[in-house]
Amino acid sequence: MKTALSDILLQKGFITQSEHENVRREHPISVYWDLRSLLYLGVLLVTTAIGILIYKNIDTIGHGVLLIVIALLVVTCFAYCLKKSKGYQHTKVNVSAIWPDYILLAGCLLLLTLVAFAQFQYNLFGSRWGLALFIPMVLLFISAYYFDHLGVLSLAITNLAAWAGIAITPVSVLQQSDFNEERVMFTGLLLGIFLLAISVLSQSKNIKRHFAFTYRNFGVHLFFIFLLAILFYYDRFYLLIFLILTSASFFLFKRFIKENSIYFLVVTILYFYIGLSYVAVRMLSIDSMGGFYGVILYFIFSGIGLIAVFKSLQKKLKVQ
Image (cartoon, rainbow, N blue to C red; front, side):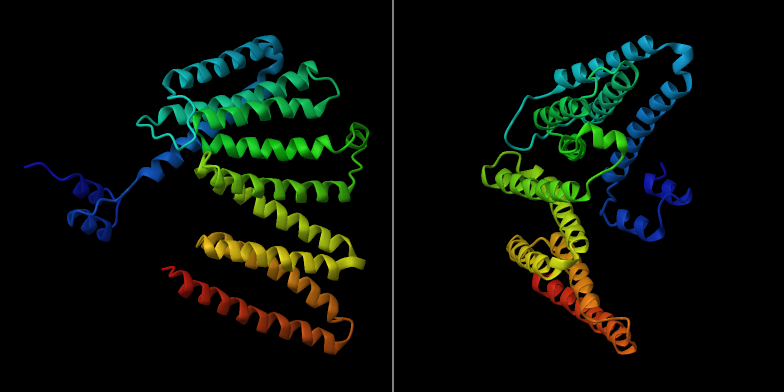
């Protein structure tokens, strides 16, 4: 009589007794995301190893040879994905094979390595650093939409943020490492609003609706981080900026309530709480003993209130 696979896994210590019992009750354990995570990690390790190989042996192998090898790898990855692709579709593309996803991710990471290497070694784009980010950014967005890949979309959005940061900063400023905080903060804020708008359009126009979460995730964090940065930076107008933060938080809170999105609700509340705490500490002067105790009491009671809000949301949205 053959030993069941679940029994073998239990004997080797790969699963617990409770997991073994679940399997015996015909409740299989899904290892889908475990395997996918390992595959993504493998892709990242391989592309990182290639980067280290280039760095360690650049004088031995030769710049031109390395450039050609990386370019061939990129072309091979994209050619394979094109062969396996079903073509562009507005809706989510369901595929049975998973290898094209990882090969595409590897190809995109190698593409970024190729462009960075060409710019660093041969100064391909000259002093136009923004162009060195803009071209791969466009290619990444095209690849994300054509091949329906969320990982590549995240790379494209990251490239967009990097390109926006360089595009609004003159080369002379970059070379002198004298960044203008105001310029960077407002660019990040506008980029957050732009990504939030794209997420809304993706849903309303039904164009890659499943991309909306990724756009929103980047957009919400960028918007609140840079709005808080502006709040901390402009001391004289902190009450006005806090009013803007409150209005934006309320608007997003109402929207996320309608969408039953607990993750974005929690994120919105936490960012608002940071801004509220900053204003409270500013208004309660900690120079005096009374103000110091007032700040302590504020954090005690506001912490209790925050927990109460989360529990209320849990009941309202029926989160287990």
